[in-house]
Image 1 (tube, rainbow, N blue to C red):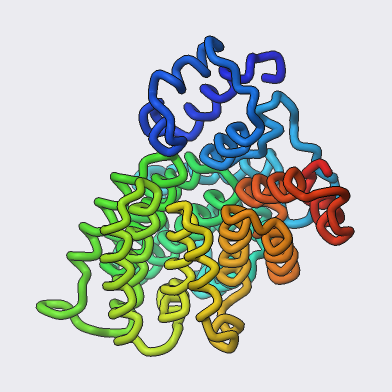
Image 2: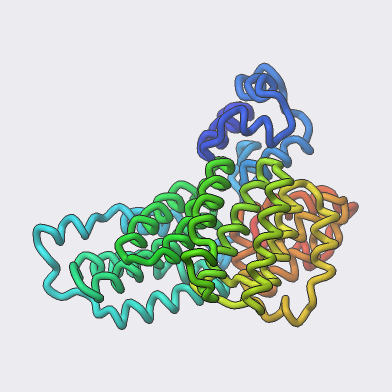
Length: 409
């Protein structure tokens, strides 16, 4: 694609992100006519500041807009290779349940073994070891699908469906982080269907957040907001529903992801309302917990408050939120959550022009969970911005990290 004019490359990546010209223009703060002229080559893109903003919105390395492949070191750890993407795609595109309807598998995988593998996969994700996880996912998907197809009735059928639903959610989460939004949506969509067969409303609730995250990544934030709020209202504690820690956690995560979707469309009123409701749920829950692998609790609410501020373009607010988080509570969170927050903080500092602290947040996140910084497209955009705006040579640690990320100094 390097021979295409830059406007055509913008159009290509906008299409890959399933983003209309109007949505793209709104997020960029331009008119639809401006976007159309750029994509047709009538208007030139000659300001680097606009290029970096476009790359940020499209969640890709700015080098791709310039017609260059990002230079990546072959020894970069924990990133996904294209053949791994294709293996995961192949596993997601199998239909074992239909085949088993005609001819059941004679030796289904033991559910106890599958359960242990699923738990290990969740922990691998929450510790930010994405490379290890993506290498294990194809087999885990096939095993979980085979188990779900083999156990057709009774408690074992529900347990197998529950495990498969979790595997789809794990796959969706890591694929979205690594920029494979369409596959992330496919996995998340399947997780909702399987959760219904598992007869677990809370599992379906968490699956809803994965679908919504994938929709946001594809530029469809408004449907994501509506979906999160709709299911949160149905699962809300009280009335005919219990007030268990598990329900509070799933309900709270639906509210948080709804707030993130609202922040993408600049709906500050909905952001504030949803974060406020999530805070009340977290306060009732007590401390930070990990029911249904949500990591939900008071500290995670504050992390989302900061992330929403960044999406709204208020980096100063994000820094203020971070500064009031108590270190013991923050340090108790799992590495993926902390590194993700530090990446959000890096974006926030960059928004207020503090590139030194933006770089420091990237370094801190890299020490916690290297893949969260080295392998996420948005992190590459932030690093490019830090390098571009640093006067003189960048600090040696920043230059080294940039080299590991494949971002040119």
